[in-house]
Length: 95
Image (cartoon, rainbow, N blue to C red; front, side):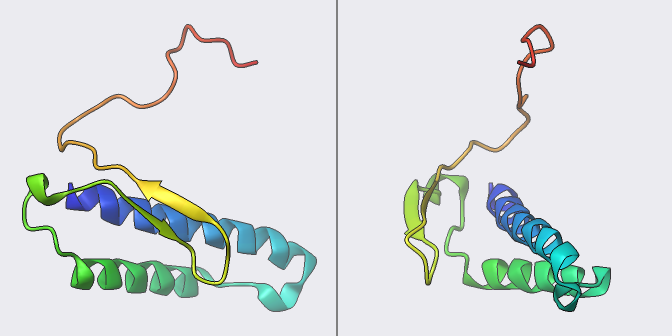
């Protein structure tokens, strides 16, 4: 369960970096190297791991948060540990 939160945090950081890359195409001064990107993701991972309070899967609870400096809010939903299938079935049309 902790891995899911950590992966989601890292995924969020990667999404921010992807948006930054799109902006960097317009402004070369914003370019980020692969090493810088990895350093940011690792720093986020360490911060999440250092501040975790959950000791067991049962401790995981739904919570909401906001992104500092913005009005954007999000909700994190605990997902039971294990394997699951994610996405649309192949039979679903892509329109």
